[in-house]
Length: 417
Image (cartoon, rainbow, N blue to C red):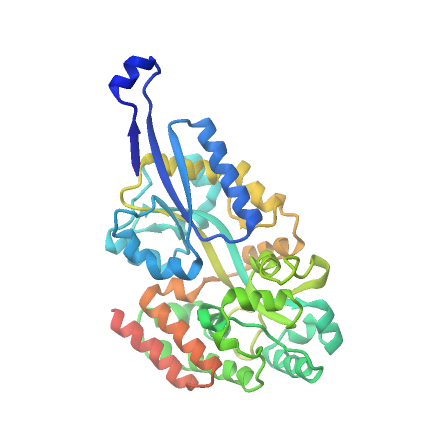
């Protein structure tokens, strides 16, 4: 936070009333130009209505953000507001003492607008540390034309066995089945994590994260890895996938060079911006396929994997930062992002403006899910989540067994306790 005060001598000369301007540093990771434009316009609108507040919009690329944030939060350059996936990573930040509780500033109206799920996602030990912004679900985005060419449809991929058969049919048609950015690791973890959601279910996951019994080395977690390795045996990914980052893989899919891409709903816009033409696949060219079910799994077939993401505050953030974000979280502002197909806002009523039929379906999926599992690399905290990402990539390279992968995650949990 920075304050600039007009000096007394200057005041005497100009007779202009003195104002203390509070600068609020707001750090985001958004790359889609249309979404950034809405964000920046909102900041300017707030500044116009609150001339004593300057909102300094800052950007840091996703991977750099993850790598540098811990150090940044301990420095004099720490942002007042920054993006968060919540989960165990936020819990670690609370324990490290780098976050500011904001419950004494946030109004009851704002709490009600975000709902219980939004408030609970950013509450630890009874203290509110952030404001939720959007919900997301990981799905298979599909290229309708390529899938039709291979003779494969969503109904064929409802089960994991059917999905594997479909992947082989796509390969037999001379089409790359799946694009993935394994260099960034987190895109690979979607596969292992979703298979855990299906095989283990919420109760077993919670028991494993607490270190109960065999923990993450228990049979359902090993089975998740075994299923993943069955997919890997089909060599489903594009050439050079281990060196491809998310942006490259998203653009590869957007260029029509792969039939499927397992990614969050944000990929609707990102695949366009990362494509060679900048246009990517149109709405008519896309379809979505929910992650397949598995035989004998303990998870509910409707359980989803994704996020409840939002904004949290550095320990030195001023009240003005919280008030800005409360205004930004309002239905009026968040409806603009819904109308622009940027994301699925959690603020009550804002999602009514969703024009995107895929986003509407995803919003309904999340609302109906018995368990909306938060991205494991965030939910389990940086240390354990990092291991989940690591073993997921090693599985994609067939460099590790399912048993070894599960045991490494369990060891990380044991070490963290």
